[in-house]
Amino acid sequence: FRTAPLWGVGTSAPYGHDGASLTLDAVIRRHGGEARESTERYRRAPGGDRQALLAFLNSLVLYQSDRLPTDLDGDGRIAERFMVAGRNTGEERFNPEWLFRTPCEIEGPIRAPDGSAGTSSACLNVQSAYGQGLASLRDADDDGFPDVVDRCPDVADFRTGCAASPPSPVVVATTVSWGGGGLALAVDPQRPGTVYVGGTDGLGVRQSRDAGRTWQPINSGLGSLHVTSLAVDPADPSTVYAGTARGVFRTRDGGGTWSGQFAGLQDPRIFALAVDPRSPATVYAGGFGGRMYRSTDRGDSWSETRVGPSVYRITALLADSGESSVPALDNQPPALYAGTSGGGVFRSGDGGRTWSPAGLAGMTIYTLARDPRIPATLYAGAADGVYRSPDRGGRWSRLDQGPTLPVLALAIDPSDSSVYAGTQEGLVVGRDAGRRWSAESGSDLGRAIVSLAVDPWNPSIVYAAQFGGGVLHKVLGNDEQAAQKAPDARP
Image (cartoon, rainbow, N blue to C red; front, top):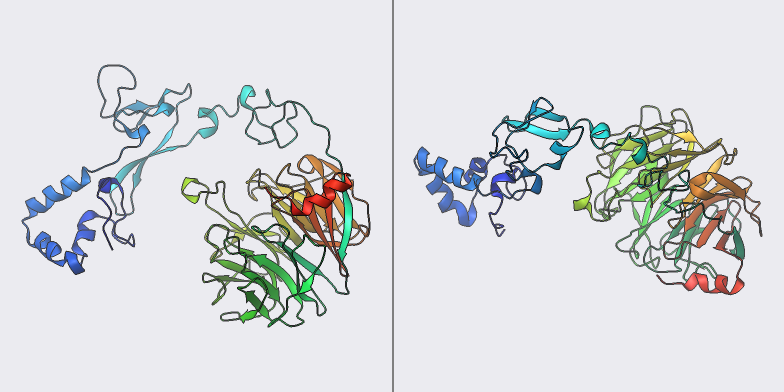
């Protein structure tokens, strides 16, 4: 390893390429290889010399703007013990929170992992300090804009007025039909028009490269298996996973050949799949008995954990990518959600290693979805309709204006947060984040919809898989010419 420059080393613990040392003394003493001679010289040095070296290294710090020593109150000096709301905040520094009308109440004294004492500046009264309860800042729809400037605050999107509803989708074509008991859909996140469909009763997997106009079987190595779920690697879309009654199968060449990835699967019956959007080498698979399988090598091997003490089976998986597309800028840890049969929703904050209940206890959850525009908003399809959580599963409420039938599939339009819900009687759409619902009409839409997907390249295209075999794709609007162009649209 080439050691990185030592700028900021005084404030960058833990140390070492593996982060295993909590102090500078410890990381110096365990250096070897080319640094062995320097390590030995450090060990033999007099104690005063070692302390002087450590003092120098600890002086190499990088300041954050709110850590810069500053005469904040204008009294002509920088206080060593600057008092805010009765709490000693340490050295007086440039922290705008201290100037709020209601200053932040900091956490105060803490104990660091190495046992040393410190002071935490975590704000304990964020709501009042930042004025989130003030009428002028109230945000009823959690879209980031105060209601006083948002003329339609019951709509989860900033608008200068309540816009008219967009036209309902219309069926363009019934693209494929066959016999089968159920279907799963997946859309290639990088190649427009590439769609995969899997089904039961010998269907295996089929692929379309023209937005669903034509389909070809891609079952080499897979055979005529019962396919319950599909997932595409977002970083390498040639890698596709298929969950089956005999385990997880993987293709690395876009469906040219498949191979079984069974190492570590104690029970091969898989019902749900998800790929970690931040770390695509990590794949999750859910099965019977609450078994959750996790692979960190794209399916080569699997480790098992359990979701809940008495979960019959895992019915749906949702990998949360967090708030930001750049993980280093995101202070919200990503999460993994599992919908279960009779156990409600569970959440894991550590990559599927441990799980805790996340609401809707005792309910069967058929499907889960997340609003890409409002990342904290989750949706769940249950036996009596659609449920929404505005805070990642902290609390749930049923969408009363929505369907009252079992909701078997969900998809969210990334352009306007419309909610597509597949039921046993067809497709219904909830405009304005599920506040206004209407049933969709068209060729075969009265049949049960068991899987839905919105084309990420062109959100006006929605794919709907039907029970009994069939895939429809729908285009927003009634312009036939636009409908013909939509499958080939590029960003």
